Length: 102
Image (cartoon, rainbow, N blue to C red):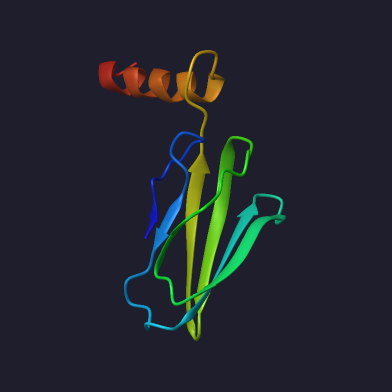
């Protein structure tokens, strides 16, 4: 599980993969839409961890988790929250328009 999704600087991504063996190695990679790796790390014996603050631009990313022969790819969205945040405002406006059928 990768959460929260969408994520922000205030709520960074966390990863939990409960089915892993106790001493399993987990490789995690975050890639942007251009295919560039923006973060990568390997953990041993950890099924839960939180990503550091990466100062990423708002947008769509792909989180790939690999442990042994198991692989998961999850789409994650980074958005901005706060005053002057055009992405945050866009999300709110879209929800209001959908609510009123406009």
